[in-house]
Image (cartoon, one colour):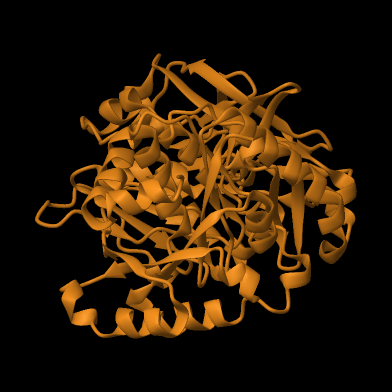
Length: 488
């Protein structure tokens, strides 16, 4: 195994592990090294489609982006286990890119022994084929109630003899206590794996931190090797959850895009590029009181969902279903993506216990039938002739991906808000008679530069620009010799 392993651990979730791991992937790739990312088990409803020997599979979005940063082809070995939450106490298990029903039903504490051989085999294979493997941990390695079943952090670090960085979010406060407390809860053999502390999201002059780093070194023997700035505009999509509501300063707002943030919303990273468009205000909505006044040029977006029927019920409970109907009735633009598309139809049928039977919002004359088989694939599509606010997309070619369980078809119109529904692309895209309501299965629409140019007349920075910016940040804030020493 020729690859050296550099691992990023965190004191908490959201400390900046994905950010730093992605930056390290690009920095080491810049040195002319062959680099691959790795995360043993990721829990996220943000997933991407990659090629596999069986056709196509899923990996966490973070490892997908890290692979691109490393100039590597994303693959399932980089994230052998992906957990996709579909209830407060349950997740769908994706093993090497494929849904595993047996593991999904298994109590989570019983999974580790079964999953560990797949994790080590994937990691060992990547090590045999690369110069450097950048490993990302999950949560905190010091969760003492989970340590005996933790197959993401210390067990991986030991197996790979990884040289670890421990990162913390100083903007939250208590950063030095987090670093010391995390280190102190580790066994001495595991403490020896930590080679440096990293302070993330710092505002101000780094010299003002003294004497805390020095005292921390006295207590632990571990240097604070970097203080990274608080940087909102780095351009890397969030690994999970919502990114901040956004509007560019000093630019008049020309369009508000309101995205409905239901509990099991998925693949929200595909809207990241909309943050970068001048004049666009992007807001997340969980309750009608959070919704700004919308005009006809504005959009309401129903994103993907890992539990469509539950999220649809949530829309009704919050009073947002009525908001969607009213907005569409008065000529507003409504977009439904994947699970959002399914909600816009007349009904969802579930004969296999996949998601749940439910009446839809009725804005499109569609019926979705959930199936046991999951559709996972890349798509290149030529859009048909489109109407209304989406007319600028007519006949454009775009790329994206599908991840969904269920098949949708047009049905005879019922009495409701919309009378006719046109299929724009077979089994993929539909529009109502007015042209205002559009439903698509295709994720990644707004990651196509030609789509952004057609809809907004704008160009946005590419992901590669973001990766270069992350590596530049490391260049400025971490000693180059230390980074090379980690892989010596």
